[in-house]
Amino acid sequence: MHPAMQGTVLILDDIADLRNLLADLAALEGFRVLKAANVRSARQILAREPVQVLLTDVRLPDGDGITLTRQVKTAHPETEVIVLTAYGHIPDGIQAMKNGAFDYLTKGDDNDRILPLLHQAMEKALRQVPAAEPAAIGEDRILGQAPAMLEAKKLLAKVAPAPVAVLLTGETGTGKEVFAQALHALSPRRDRPLVALNCSAFPHDMLESELFGYRAGAFTGALRDQEGLLQAADGGTLFLDEIGEMPPDLQAKLLRVLESGRYYRLGDPKPRQADLRIVAATNRDLLQDAGTGRFREDLYYRLAGFTLHLPPLRERGRDVLLLAGHFTAQAARQLGKAVPALEPGYERLLLQHPWRGNIRELKNVIGRSVLLAESGVLTADTLPLEFHLRHGGHEDPVTLAEAEKQHILRILQQTGHNKARTASLLDIGIATLYRKLQEYGVH
Image (cartoon, rainbow, N blue to C red; front, side, top):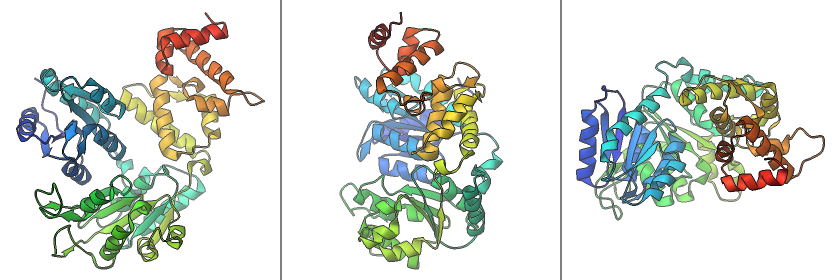
């Protein structure tokens, strides 16, 4: 028997008996347990409160657990996901793990693994969140000393207490969600919920019902009344990411909320009131979209009560190394490793890279390096192939074949000429590796 461990488990299954059984088992282990019968309800729970472990079936009435895993790990990377697959459907479990799942279970055969796996996933989830993290509050969480970032943080501190809508602009991956969290943390609404919705993640009908809620019978499958995220965020902050992807008819309904606080659930003639602050984010030029009819101009000016632009990482100079150090420590903690140092050559390649994916790309690259590092130092060999294509260390541009050869030989040297390990790190077959080494004259 494991010792009781604090943490919340969300059980998602449309079969009530199985859902209740799993919930009872988890509760007996000392976990706080929440239940959902469909993807829609699970998303609303995840938007409302922190969940450490999601245990989900693959087949669900309004979606599937494999796709949901990818969406949850994108929106809530701190949540660990365990997927329940049907007997004989191992490929489902493998795909779920590729999408970021902690692990998968096969119904029936693996019932004795459920509780140990829950504890392992919970331990990992709780380990990712330090007991006390004062830097996670307000603008202190936003790392950066580049002039553009210092100015953005200064403006953030001024606008956060003000009762105005804020529009965050900038390329994908520049940290708009972190700024939204800081705006909420520094506002008078900090003790009320912060609810996030990515407008590009849902088809039209689902986006409308997620945002506004619905009455039973409003559409096929609406078996009971359901509150939307406007209600969930009442008194707090609603963060609408990728607002430029919202369909025009929903833009009109959102405009009504901004103007009067009034909205209607689907199928409900009775108006409702929402007292909330809206923070929106976009990587599009909404004024240009307004000129082409893609986005409502009146909605733009309502959302842009105050506009904050976040600079791309390539314009932030040595902030790249500041962030790299932070992500290195974070990845090492998650992997249970000592925090490695960054060798000068590694830092040089980071500073030279264009970072089209911005901070999100940097975090992924650092995580990969920490995973591959077999010493206490992050070396250039742990960087993806494109770094060596662009910065191969040659005066003249190298060919793709030459860059591939250099990369393979680096990894081979790093593994001490362990060919099986090298093939695994390169994600190629062992026969392919032997063929290439034979071409290079390496034995």
